[in-house]
Image (cartoon, rainbow, N blue to C red; front, side, top):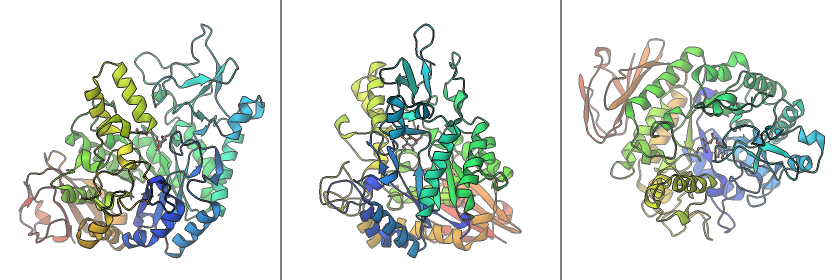
Length: 547
Ligand code: TEU
């Protein structure tokens, strides 16, 4: 099936389904749930990393790219999973974390033991003449991006945790080693690859301080050489398979670069994730802050990206949720009274756009953030570091905790809620992270008498059956509407108008004249009557078609 008709589902293996009662999800658990995945009718599954890892960053700190971490299963479990998914036409996308390795990786360990070949795999630098750290760069998880390299007088660069050492992509042996990993998994039948923070691999060879007032990330994000690296990786690995599906996770990227990464003529990637729309509830761009989302800004960003990527022939990965983000319902929808309607509205926004929709596990049953009473429930390194940093900078415990509660990555990492039981039907043991609202939100209830899962099935079916959804152009509708985010899709003489009310109040939209006798393709409320002045109910979405 063409990429434009596909929908991808994301599974966080640690939290999907536990088959052996140790409280951690595993590959055999996923095998058991294939009928559920097939029912949703998704085309590919992106799995977060399940490779051998000390798990300091839940598997994004890889110690062996070629083996499965025993807590998730064995290579034969993986082979069985791939074969059983293939039998029902579901592809596999693996997470390739190539910006850094775990400091437990043999490459880093050999470098530490003095092996020059592997020292050249990493960024090792001496202190400055005055004895200070090699640069003033900050780790994305807090503190300096430099840590002492063993007993030497060198430091190694880590843009993420201290146990995640950045690989030096200038070294052709590093790039060849990464391509070899991709090819190893291709030989196992894997056709999809997600490249973790791939746009920060293009650091300059001379690492320099960020000038005062300039964020260090601007020095190493989206540099021109990233495009060269991707062209090479494409040529030496996944590009040899015409059906491969690739997505780059692009931290703080631009539309111009993303067009470059994804325009098929460039032979780089199939699509990219960007995160700008998910920063519209940040105060002054700071994640560890709290405010209601800025609706005009959210619309402007969604529209700018859709318009720019369309104009440049680029392709977007469309998403609200992933394992790094609090649940979208708690941010852009309503996690209470209008939970289902707002979940349907948010899904409509994404699934009707031009690009490839991603569904993060649990989204299709309307999962929300857990309600944890204390810091003791949080386990993610980023949240724990952020809490300490907030306290250090003068926040009270209560204020710091409120921010952590709304922003922690743990919010999306709670176990998939299969039923209303104490462990949410996720495990027979003690879940590694506690679910809190499975009595109200779970798969069993949703399949028995819910409407949200069915709504997702419909959205997925529409993309496969309506060429205008898969391949039509995107155009802006009135950006100044105060409650509604709408947009046009067009293909030949056919037009769709997609209207989404982001609020719990009804609102009126004066329909463009050419749409007053349009057909209703779908709405999340019954009995829609097309009127010149249309009333949109709370969180209502309507898809109108003409021609
Ligand atoms: O995340 C990359 C990234 O840009 C993070 O800084 C992200 O913005 C942050 O987690 C949000 O708070 C990827 C992975 O998705 C994440 O799970 C890893 O921790 C990170 O890379 C390092 O590998």
